Length: 297
Image (cartoon, rainbow, N blue to C red):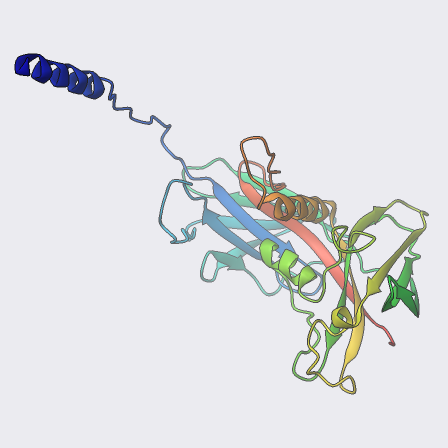
């Protein structure tokens, strides 16, 4: 009887261990891609940032900057071409060749061992004719400040806009946004408005001769950017309207969708891909301009 018990335990153990099978995940060898990051605006030198993409299975946080590339910018309207020189942290730049409004620019990047990388984008002009009407009203039993504006320029365009308040400790943000991710953060830094929180999204486009009317509805907290410690005596308020190239606009739309869906990833959800206009690589090469219009509250 004791023998049968031992035999039974042995057979159970053998069956359990014999079911264990080791699997090794096979994956193709990771080959990094070239990531190009370059936004440009009128009167500021071109800055092109080059890095290698990372393996999603890598635990390394180190950024692999590319230091041995040859980078060229061509002004298509004139045929002028200039070489950019390496500065630091993957940045290639120059000081004499400056972007011009309504000019088309082409980028060419040569990295040893990789296919030639290229991209193109136009620098749009700033909006010139904007009509603004403001009014205080009551919405949902709360006092709000409404800013209505109409872009009256006859040409087509792609736009992003937001509300900005400044004081002596928080000066007007008119810095150039070379980094594509920083561009998205900067447009939302001072109370970004999208369809999730207000009546309208904070981006849109228009064709030639098309009327372009939009509005912002602001609460007191949004007007002051949530900072009630700042004295209104020193405050200034602005509507910032950014004119984007088609490439930058496409990137902004994809980034907006990405940010809205990034916290909802599941086996049945869809996470949009970020837009890229880099041939044989990843990233963005795009032009933009911006205008700050002071608004009386």
